Amino acid sequence: MGQEIERKFLVANDGWRIGATSSSLLRQGYLSSNAKATVRVRSKNDEQGVLTLKGKTEGISRSEYEYEIPIEDARELLAMAEPLVLEKRRYIVPFGGLIWEVDVFEGRHAGLVIAEVELDSEDQAVQLPDWVGVEVSADERYFNASLARSDGVPK
Image 1 (cartoon, one colour):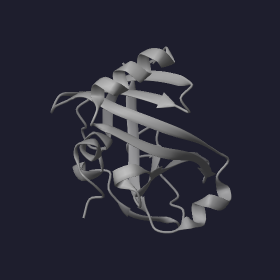
Image 2: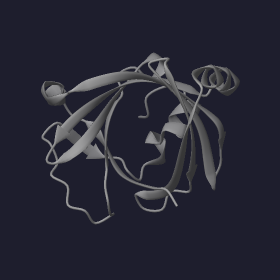
Image 3: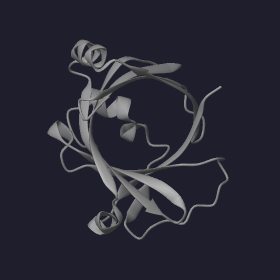
Image 4: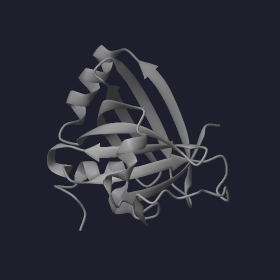
């Protein structure tokens, strides 16, 4: 079984930019989202498509299955997902022996910046960079599926 263990934080300042090694433009849409599972389609730089199925979040863990799909299929599925589509630029930022992903949201969520780090276990020690702020791992308002249903940045 695929599993995702992830902590998520609001970003407090732009200090992460100095360590960013790459970025990509992501468009992701939600075809289905309920208490048990989420089905997401994503395009990366309008060149690569991915279909993802995620199970219910328990703590900071959940089951996750990802499958590469043709970009043409991803475009069609994103159109089906409208208006539940997010746009963000994801930056890769190595720090403390881990790979952080910093998402700078665009469109109706402009101004929202979230940092995520994937872990090997829920109790893994994590050195927090000085540019992370409040942890929002358990705050459903910051789940991407919830953001896709919202009109803007959570308050």
